Length: 118
Image 1 (cartoon, rainbow, N blue to C red):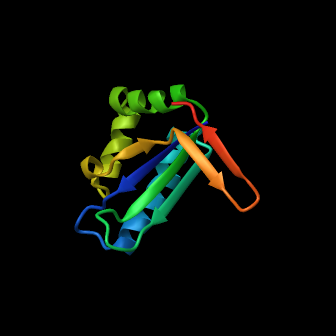
Image 2 (tube, rainbow, N blue to C red):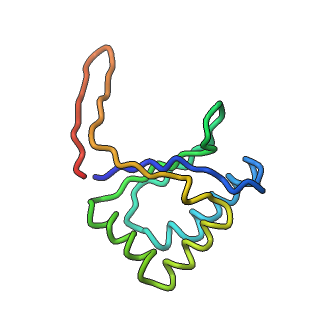
């Protein structure tokens, strides 16, 4: 499994609530159809003193599916339409995506360290 997080900035003309509604709509309309292999699409609206309004957590089955998504956006009409829709509500250039390489689950009972592929 590959895990990514995208720290999301919205287009300035949208309120946080309008942004979230559009983000959910986009995910339902585009992501579920265009990326059916993603096993988790978690969209989180953030509050606090940060430059980001949201964070997306995505789980991919493997690195090949993540790389195929980049090619989809670049090489297909459907991918370009998907990307164009994102640009209507999200500041893509200001929204970095990071790849999780290690996880540590820490509880009083145990600590479990996992190295993720990527």
